Amino acid sequence: MLEAHNPIIMKNRKDIGLLIITTIFILMGCGGKKSNPIPQPLAPTAVLLGTPQQNSVCIIGTIVSATQSTVIFGWSSSEFTDSYDLTVTNLLTGTSITQNFTATSGSLSLLRNTPYSWYVTSKSNTSTSTAQSSTWKFYNAGAGTVTYAPFPAAIISPTFEQMVTTTTGTVNLTWAGSTVTTGTTLTYDVYFGTTNTPVVLKSSITDSFLNGVAVTSKTTYYWRIITKDTAGNASDSGLYQFSVN
Image (cartoon, rainbow, N blue to C red):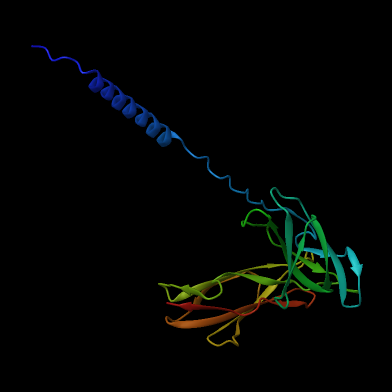
C-alpha cells in the first residue's frame, strides 16, 4: 500500500532545502570577497648634487667676515619629497651641521679656508623612508689663499673598530686622498702602533696603500694618515683603530 504524501511534511522539506541553499550562497559570498590593500606612501628618491661641485674650491658666496662666508648649496629635485636635509661636515673638526629646506637650494655660514663634505637627505611628510645623495667634498676659499691643503685621507680598510682576521700575521692598510689643486702630487705619512698616539711607520709614500704591515693576534692597533702636498700643506685623517682576532 502506497504511503500518502503529507502536505505539511513536504512544505517543511522545501523550506529546509531553501534555507540550506541560501546559507551556502551567503557563505560563498563572504568567503570570496577580498578587501582592497591599503596603499602605502611612496618613498622619496635621492637628489643629484649640483654646487659646490665635487673636489672644488668654493668661491661663490657672500663674505661675512675674515673667517666666515655664506656658501650657497644647490641640488636637483627628487620624487615624492616634501623637504630636504642639508648636512655639511667640517673635515678638520668632524663637526656637522644639518638644516632643513623645502626648496632645492640653501645657504649656510661656514668657516673660510676650510675643507668640507656635504650631502642631502630627501624626506616625505607621508613616509618614514628617506633617501640620501652621494657625498661630495669642497674647499671653502679663504682670503688671499693661493694654495689649499689636501682633503683629509678617507680611510678605506681596516675600517674603524673592525675585527680583522689574518692568516699571514699581516694586514694591508688602504685609504684615498684627494685635493682641489690640480697637478699636485700627494704624499702620505702612515702612523701606526698599539697606543692612541701611534708613531710614524712609513713617510712620504705616494701610494694610497701600505701592504704587509705586521700585526699580532688579540691586539688593538691605532693608525692615521697625514696627507701632504708639494706646497707644504698637510691634513690629518683622524685616528682609527682595529683589532686582530
